Length: 122
Image (cartoon, rainbow, N blue to C red; front, side, top):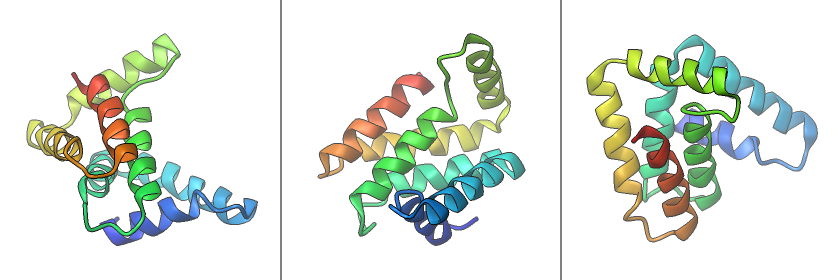
């Protein structure tokens, strides 16, 4: 999935229309299930993209990224941590770099979402 498609899906995931929102949430689940590495990379790219027109989309990208890295359930958290470590090191580095770049965003919501994700990577 490319960044423009991810941006549109994230925007749809915030729709007040339940049908649109549910379809977008399902697309996000399918994207992660089919190619977790690409999914995490594109989320991190969207988070870091200062040219993105919607701050809420970038914030949601960061929150989705964080949610794919940890869970309140201990077993799920351990599985997600193992999945993260199984990704290629260069991909993990790219995700970390994008997340770190987002800390310098001019948008407070984006900085907070990036910080939440980084706290789970560290």
